[in-house]
Amino acid sequence: MRRVLIRLAIPPLLFFVIVETALVLWHYHAADRTRRTIEFLAVLIGAGTAIYSVLLGVHTTRGAAAGRFMERWNDPSFAETRKKLGQIIEKAKGGQPVDQSDRAAVVSA
Image (cartoon, rainbow, N blue to C red; front, side):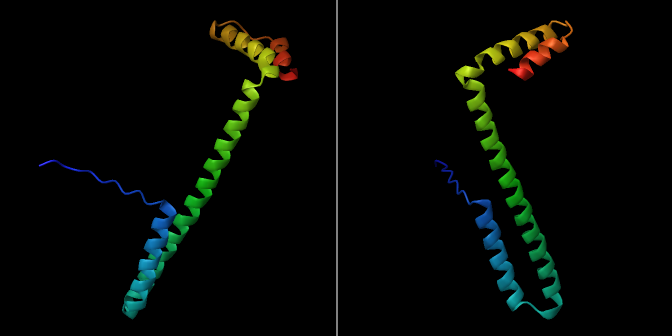
């Protein structure tokens, strides 16, 4: 018999909404002594959702910044600066000291 693997991708925020909904329903039907525990779980999951959303926003922002950097790096007008920077890196790899004038040439370009 052949095994078939089925992958189901649920977005994390949708997963958090489903879990929170289940906790609300459980809270509604639970006894009084367990409601505080359920509330605590809901708060923890809500905090996890907030942290995840913040980190997702940071990730998106970093990706956009990296894209803009690549656009600037590949711009033909930046070719001379890339060349100077490559020379400085090769100089540093060879163990030679990098002069202040070399650094200034790259920064001013």
